[in-house]
Amino acid sequence: MDHDTDHERTLDGLLDRATESALMSLDATVDVEQRLRDLFRQAGIDPDRVPDDDKHSR
Amino acid sequence: MSEPGNMENQLTPGELEAFVSCFKKNFHPLTWFVIRAGASVTEAPDVVQEAMLAALKSWATVQNPRAFLHTAALRILHRRWDKAKQEHAAHQRIAQETSATAFDMRLDVNVNLDVADVLSLLRELPQAQREAFALHADGFTPPEIAEITGQKASTARSNVRHARQKLLRMIEESTRKEAGDGP
Image (tube, rainbow over all chains, first blue to last red; front, side, top):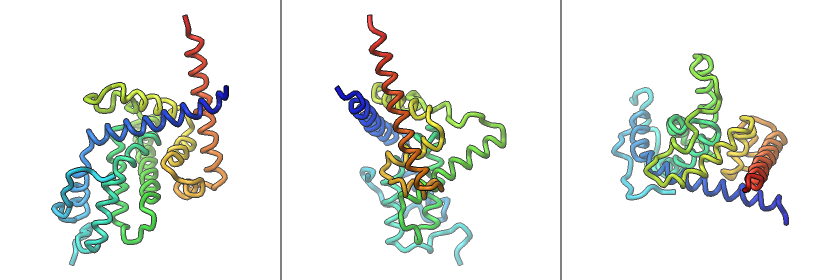
């Protein structure tokens, strides 16, 4: 039995699942559209120039 | 004449559209990167916001937006930590909030156990290895990691290798401990 390969797979699987979970959680908690509007305001750009999206692009 | 900080007329409509697309595509992945690099869950979006502002200001000359954003995010994070150290506001590099409970509890808590496990493992790495490994996980090659972190390519390669070896050792120890904790 190749323990090293098993551990490599465990680590890679864990990293992938954590990334998926984290991105899901961030999707639910961080409003990217609002962040973009805030950024535009900060940069002196009309926030209304932010195009409306139904979903966030990835 | 445009006001200071007013970028309204400095970007073409095409450039603005490209930036908006980059912002929406990279905000969450970059936030997760910054968390893995050691930021708290609450400060990470603010760090990314600052990095995005820096990108917007230089947008016309940015060749590689992802690399630019990762570089900027790390610099901003380090600057915040340095400032906090100077103000005696924090003594720990790793924020206390990097835990599963800091994520939205409306989601299935089991979904977040993997996040907690990963952050717990990464917390054990030296800062340079943690950052190199996070960049490696985000698809950057050792030469790209070297450029982003300001290290030599050989150092970046070594940091990624040692980080992975240490993470594997921790998983092995954990597995052995679980097997040993039998009835």
